[in-house]
Image 1 (tube, one colour):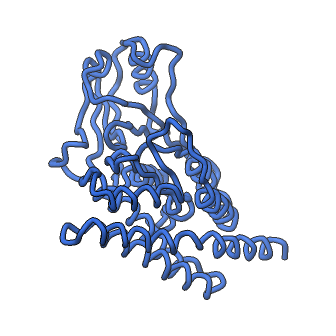
Image 2 (cartoon, rainbow, N blue to C red; image 1 turned 180 degrees about the vertical axis):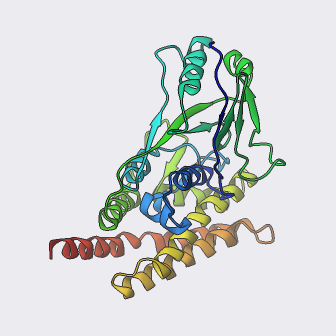
Length: 310
């Protein structure tokens, strides 16, 4: 490993429940893209995603295909690129190759570590990597630093991967929203699932979530954490359509109210003061509302198509 000069990047990763989105937001702000939190969630399409692990373990909000969101982010001026290597992913050669790429980056690329959380790289010296701590120093799933030696030897938490965020051209807002609505409708209609998958996405996620709650046999912390992440994303969508949509006000009011209601139901399901059947009831009520949202989003798409053609 060649010696590397120190790199310091002045950025902040906000303390959102979704660390994927907070990492992207931190990179956006660094590049001068001043998107509000509701805009980040809606125009990226993240607000319409939902992924649940079979037994409601807390990995559900992390382990799903983020590529549609990354495609939408590109129209917002942010290109996500994963680091790869030609070596076996369990080998030290693989880790050395990734570290070489990390050390070759300058401040024109923001680096994100994917460990137990998504964390932005804030500083690098000749021996260590130092990361943003979106929830402060007392949360054990976030790590403040990682040495080169431990990274190469594999002495770190499992599943560490890396991606960069770089600036690119920003598309018009109407294009960004079209992309968002298209991915949202696709998320809402995604009902197929691989037989060997332990994860459920879209409509099937809601059903699995409620069924596991009704069974009484599920990961309590994972249920709570899923509620925090997916409730947050719907709350941000509610704020966006109520305050920032601006077009066809009746559609904005309708969507704002429905996303806010979904968020409220999901957050109520997280309460420790209610029974499993009551939790399942709140999730089923949220599911029922979200199941009809694709029709309203299609109306939004039609409006944008009409607006662009005139």
